[in-house]
Image 1 (cartoon, rainbow, N blue to C red):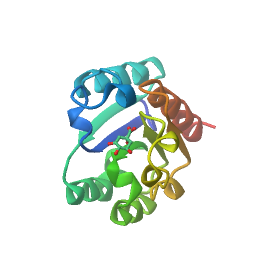
Image 2 (cartoon, rainbow, N blue to C red; image 1 turned 90 degrees about the vertical axis):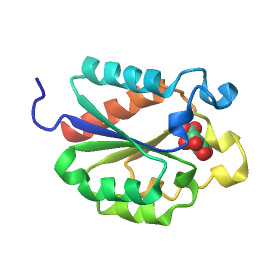
Image 3 (cartoon, rainbow, N blue to C red; image 1 turned 30 degrees about the vertical axis):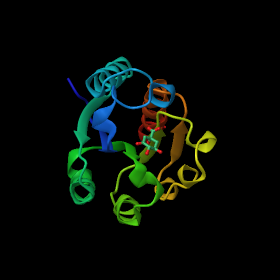
Length: 149
Ligand code: DQA
């Protein structure tokens, strides 16, 4: 039974639904469903309640961020390629009203230069990159700490 301040919204952006078909050297072999199931398991283990959202449409992603303060106490965001250039998502995140952690499955700083920039990072309390699915566990731990210091 969820208790107050334990609702984590997990938002995945463009192309993340295609995990399982994407380069396994960067993303591992998990399907998107398996990724969400693993995150759900971490959330249960840590006493949090995870809800999931994914879209390939930037405007839908922005509109979900507009609704976020009614839906959740905290946010994990992996916006995929949008992370590197979508000022629209970055701005929406700034007034979303809940603490957020940015996660990338792959080590973006070790990849192409265009992935080194995140336009979301300044609106997040932390960024976790290159730890695969385990990175989501780190994000839940950080958000739980932020919600219950
Ligand atoms: C990603 C990294 C991004 O650079 C890429 O565009 C993705 C996935 C990751 O999880 O490693 O789609 O966000």
